[in-house]
Length: 100
Image 1 (cartoon, rainbow, N blue to C red):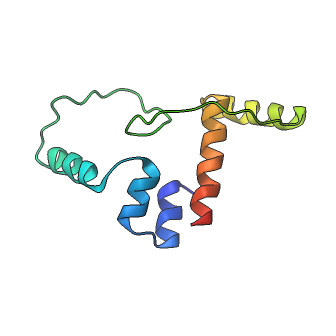
Image 2: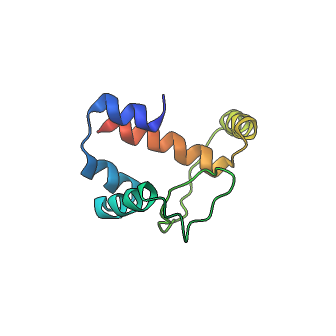
């Protein structure tokens, strides 16, 4: 289930969703207005990438995992063309969404 499907299923309002994504509702509304007006100036387009639309500071943490867990994570991440870190962040995001 995608992140958006989970948000819809849980009936979350716009403000908590924007907060979870690290953006303000006014930033989203400004981007929507710009896009809908056809003004794509200043935007760079390329291949889709894993991550947040607005850069938020990241911090490193240490987690101990069993070897078989790491092998499974690495295998699935490689299959999806993403890094181990991106795979783990996505799994955490899914659980955080489920908790709301």
